[in-house]
Image (cartoon, rainbow, N blue to C red; front, top):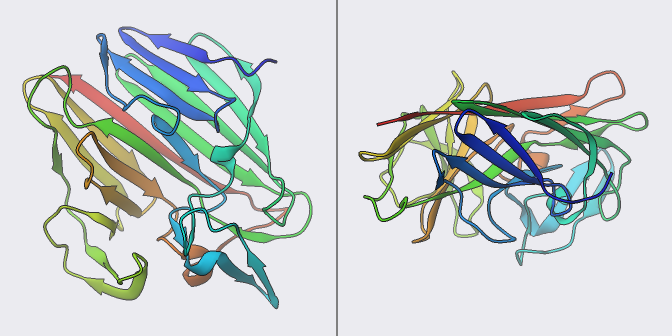
Length: 263
């Protein structure tokens, strides 16, 4: 199938998917209001096969050290799949399945499958990384850019309770220490052992909840135009510090659900 954008609809919700632009969610409209920052680099992109930064772009797998391109010098950031064109496996009015086969510079063969399922009041994104060959460490995450204001309303408010914050070093990477959550602005990773649960409220307009069974979330709100709430299967630099192994018998799977209600 072609790499044209896909539109899903359910009730007054509309999602645009961009398989040709990294398999990203290009837009989410609820009752006509666009919730995601627009532009080729924005929307919501999948972070896979790793999330956030890898220190110096290097990760170790057994005796082998692999070097990834330094696309955020001195580090490598946010995986490789957002830079590729995804294939459309199937699509209906309210669901689409996209796939991406891992290629260079990622050193291992594997397939990523992403499912987007829309209902009138929620969008669920599910991703899996599979291999039929050698095992490898991987991470899954999503990087949505939610608009700070909707059509001239008040700025969004973020509400969440984290068990800890990953202490951030000068190099923007977790030091390995866990500290008490600090007030923002943030470009920080938080731990939520009971699952990610973050509420965004545009006062008088909309409340949106980002949920996931995973226990890490990066919150980034240092930009004026948007705030990011990024559920992921491990912390930044996790390929080195907390690797999750994908094996031929055991894929890595994760999902996130955004549910909303009008205020």
